[in-house]
Every structure is written in structure tokens, then in C-alpha cells.
Length: 224
Image (tube, rainbow, N blue to C red; front, side):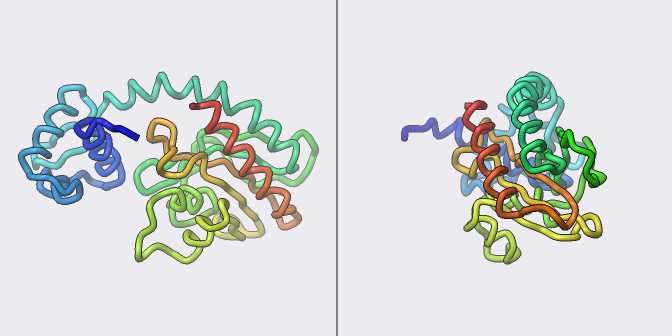
């Protein structure tokens, strides 16, 4: 597949900056991109001109407000696509269904759907956040990234399986199952998200794993 190298580098730079809490210097970015510092400087200057990144007084490069404008257009599309599928997932698994995304080093719940039946529910709400390294949602997102030498064994397992399962990591007695919306090379618009369900110990994890993978695949396809 043919790509535009300059655009590819700019998008990679945004992704690297987004994953670095506290920002990073241009020299650090150049090293991560494996380019000369002058090239990294031009990339940052271009992104800065579109308000996608900003440099602080200390020279550190951070994400900027232009991304919020882009996100404001993306969110309605995501909700329109995901809401009916998430509702169906909650009904099928009889569990709380969620769509979560990576924000820095944390995983944040963007959408939640509850099952119709009066089952015991887990306290998982829109805006709930936790470290990416804990909980089925965070582990599923990490599993969609490129493999790293120091990643936890559960991330490696989730990458092999296509889903993650955790028990009691975020709430005692709760079981979570999640699947990334797309692997790294096919992630729509760079969006790092996952679909999952969470319930108490009686969750049928085999059925839930198949259901969340199917839902994640449908959302990825509809997002293009």
C-alpha cells in the first residue's frame, strides 16, 4: 500500500505525543520517529500551525485544542454507530456493555448500555476511568498496540485471543471481557478503543468473548 511519508510521520508524531504523559521535547520526538531533529521540528511546526500540538515555555510538546475540535465531529458519528450495537450487546450478554477509549495512560468509558433485565449490575458509568494496565478494557486496548518486550503476560494473551478477561481488578466480584475495536494497523482514524461487558461472577465468559469480538468488528467496519 502506498503512503505519503510526510503525512505518515505527522500522524505517528501525534500518536507518540498523545501517549507521552507530560509532553516531550523535539529531540525526544526525533529519536522516537528515527528522523533528524530538523525534520521533527518541521513536523511539530506544521502540527502547531493547525493547533494540533503546542509547545510550552519549557519547550515540551503537548496535544492542543485543535484535536478537541476534530473529536467533537467524531463523537456524534461514533455514538450513532455504536449505540444500537452496544444496546444489543448488553441485552445478549445480560451484562453492562461499554465502549471505552485510551486517554493518555488511562482508559475512559465513553458509552455504557445496561441490560433490560433486572440483573445485578456493576457500577460502571460514562466517565469511569482507570489505568490502561488494569481492567479488561485497558488490556484490550494495549493488546491492539505493537508488541513490546516489557508488556504484561495478560496483554500478550489478549493479543493472541483477540479479547481480554479480568476478574476483580476494578471491583470485587466483577468479571470484565473486552475486545479492541481494531488492531493497530486498521484502527479507524487512529482511535484507540474497545468494546466490552462487565458483570458479576455468573457471566458466561465464552459467550461474552464471542459477542464482544463481533460487536467490536461491526463498529470498526461501520466507522470505515
